[in-house]
Image (cartoon, rainbow, N blue to C red):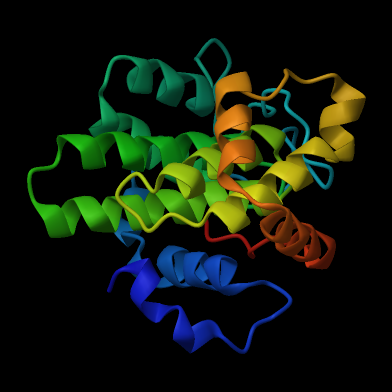
Length: 226
């Protein structure tokens, strides 16, 4: 079931919002359990990464690494760079599934799903990949990762195979702009072209709506799945 078709089913979840509720559905119902059975004997919550504040540093090497071996996250990213998603995604799924503190892995896994969707000739399968990708990126953004919040602005403004929502994009832009962890860490600036397109897309009333949504937002973490 596409994530967008269940919007009304989550209309009674005002604190999280329908997009977040739909992403929870995607991650807990649509995710493929087989991915979590490959490649890595994961550890418990904790470690580096975004943590409660959503920092931008590389996550701590997860448990399961052996001395002298490349840690699972680095292995996954090396495979992703080569376009080997079949091997990269199970590793990222294990790490991302730990939850809080592993927002960077969640973001990268979400990007993988969007990448494979562009290569998939089956429309239903591609849509399912986009749904899962959005869910992981949203989970990362809800955990406070600034780069995931910026990615959500891009996805929600352009649609990229999903219905666009410029006001929701504006909300995530405002959250990115005032993200305390991003400010403290001195993370990179927002994509100037994307920022300009967003500002041209929203009217004053839209910005007021976006600000109201941003004010109602709070960090949100799903429980560990691995």
